[in-house]
Image (cartoon, rainbow, N blue to C red; front, side, top):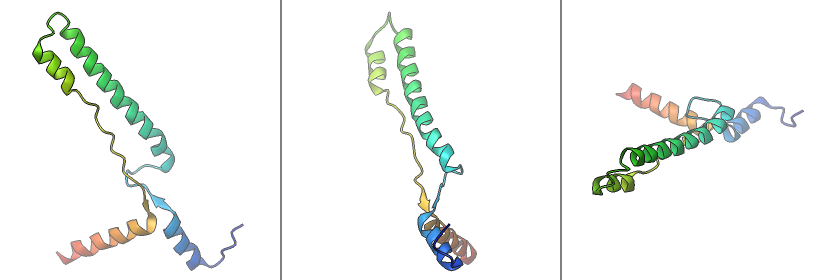
Length: 101
């Protein structure tokens, strides 16, 4: 049982410690999805490079080597979680700004 019994103190601590995921999914789902996205980008890079090598095996000209050197892995963008209090402040600020316009 929690030692904090006053509701206002609980709410203040909740806003300070809890996080909000801006990606629209739960924390547990996001922990699973980030490694999955990273594996997908590595697989896509490997497939592109293998396809380029297979299609150009007999004609390894300068153009094919240039394309091989220009291949890069895509970055996986991770939306960082934000404290719940900060997110609510930003949301209220955005709401007030939209009302002013």
